[in-house]
Length: 148
Length: 409
Image (cartoon, rainbow over all chains, first blue to last red):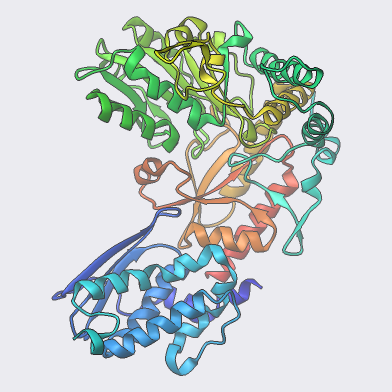
């Protein structure tokens, strides 16, 4: 059962994170904390999402999730980014009942097992929530076509 | 006398459970202890046969409930060496007991700017945040003892830290994260020399070794029932009676009063003054039964057992490659609560893999974030022991840590 949580993909991203480190310039930044465990993450984005950088400390799930987020969302249009964001959120909140789409979520599908551990879902979501806030601060809205 | 572990464990129904296909290895007693059959039965028997409200009924059930509730108070008072049962105020937990003192202190200590309250860097948030708030309300200054690299209270600045401006010192008796047992003798002597009161957070000490308030010489202690084989929802404040008498009500209401008119109210003497509303009667009776159970085994025997388990665990953990122990590395002056780091693995992940093997430990900042900061880590993994802990369980922990290392190799 534990193997479903600690997939090799997750452990790989944890040990060899992609795009880690805060970089300039950026237009939006958000710092999120999980008060129960002390995990922290800072996410920075440019207004066109051509750069997403992050730094933080925390468990394998939260740190691997940040690495996957960077890989999946960097260089996407805001519309694409939020489609992926929503798919990841749905997967995490699906209590293990949601079948992930690899075409949309890439390595993110490895987190399907996390959804079965309610105590760990918030670890996986920490970077994604920080990204959402950072994007909002960079002026990227959830539905840019409508609000533009 | 050594504890008969087979017999003791047979009293705890939950210890026969399996977790994820493995026998339960419960190493989280500093968080909450398990409950023996004797406590569960006392509570059920009360509910089934004697339930009535306390201190206000003339009928038989109310009288029986009152006798049982006050009987529990007497047992608890004797257990900690209180001069009289009225010195024990029932609260819902240690946090409420500390808040009771912190919220009434501004009044009975006439606190204001220039006054000082002293705590330590080793405190649980429950013995830190109420004092921070008290200082914010009154303009008093909060100061604190540091923690040494060995995880001991740094008393080197005692005479400067506790001075004529100090009104109250509140420190932990046994750290919930480092396991350190503090001897408060020097602090008590200095505080009383300058006219300050001393409160001791005994949440982790009263359950594990003999605590006698008269010997300690302190003015207040706080402790909680659920860490000492009792149920949740019941704890206690002990205070010297002449101090409790000077303190105003905290959560006022029914039971706390002497006479009420529309114009004003006079209040009952302690402890009733501080026990507003219908108290957790069944829980108090359960805590009384827990005290009976602890007395039957003997607190000295319990302490000796935990010292042996702690020595065994410190050695077992030190033998696992990549494990670093925070706090005192030998059983001297420490209790059966051991926090550690596994090199390169976050505590959350350590706890998750151990749980998969049925080993239940606590991970996180343990409501003592300043201690984690002091040792430069965001979180720690903590194994904590009690009277039912066996060396086999420590072995299971060590094996589990090997598995952790394998997964994250």
